[in-house]
Amino acid sequence: MTSENVSDNSPAVLLFPQFESELYRMAAYEVAALTEEQLDFESDKWGWAEWSIRRHLSHMASGNFRWFWQRWGLEMFPGGAPPNIPSPEETALLTQSKYDRRMDEDLYWGVDVILEKLLQGLAIGQAILANETAGSVRTKEFEFSDTGEWPWFYNVHTGLRRDPELNTRIWFTLETIFRHRYFEHITHLYNIQRIKLAQGLTTKTEVPIEGYMALPGWDLSKP
Image (cartoon, rainbow, N blue to C red; front, side, top):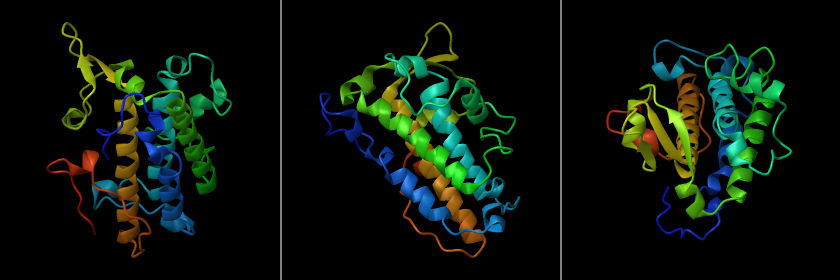
């Protein structure tokens, strides 16, 4: 993925065309026709299989709501929320459930339901991009608290600024947020594919090895 040839005056959607349909299409295609048993296969043999396909998918869907709405929604939509933003009550279920970085599994368990929320979250990203230029996403900043959970994060992204007086306070550009979401999607899609291979299933799409997965030492092993 490259953005060097996109001028600042260009529509922001040109930086991240994958959010229009590609990311959803790849996910939906990979999980199509899988049985409940195949969706829920987990194994402690590989770190990437500690979550099932269903749970990787739920994490992907939840993440869009957490990054595009929960943290900075009012800043990203200064004119008011678009129609596809869930109610505050549902947003809490999508972003703050008792399950680790996944939606509430008591309510969002069926794969069709999870895919619906994945599509809705990606649409929120599209709505943001539709209101921005390439230049504005490269300069708009959002404050974030760095807990040190992701040491690899800073080996991939530009567009980060750290508070010189408070080391845990950083700012992301909007471009960095979108790039992170893209890298997260393809990373978990790759994990879904590996879980399919571990069950003797074939994969259906080609996931690009870039972003986090391209870092030295990243586990790209397959069963």
